Image (cartoon, rainbow, N blue to C red; front, side, top):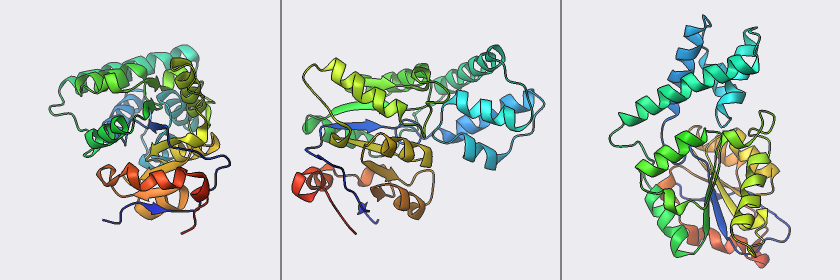
Length: 255
């Protein structure tokens, strides 16, 4: 176990850590293989050949809409809004069917402890994901952790162009937290994003949010080069270790 490894981080006006923003697929639930299979099935039924490299490039960390649109365009398919919506509904229905058969849910080890740490430190919790809201809400409810998430920003809440790696979803999450808790006045630098994909890390950093990368989807060294901090597994996260980096005197950190 390598623990939490720091990279360079310097965010102007960094204060105390006040909110943790969780990615969903790849951080909360280990279901990326299922999403890949469902997208593959959709393409096959549309007489298109799936490609794993293309899936990893266009889909990891992104919304289903952005993923499917890119994959279809890549193979020369004309993508109308009606056609894309029909495919997305088919994929969503298939996901719900598979979800109902998952027992137990493939939640990442350490998730319960991360939530406990956040609650003990009185940090706001939010989900910031490219997944559909119905999928996120279903999983959180089945896992009995929905009550702890103050805000959910899903792929339904941003445009295709606003999908990660664009900063839109993180900006929206902070905006909604401030609306939900009047007087909170939360800033991006007071948040911690927990991400497993390159697109997600880029989105958080573009929004000015410090990022902890978890090597669930990519090798540790690749995550380590992109995120402000890196760990191999979610269960290694100790928020007490990160708290000093949010103090003004220690906001600039070098390896």
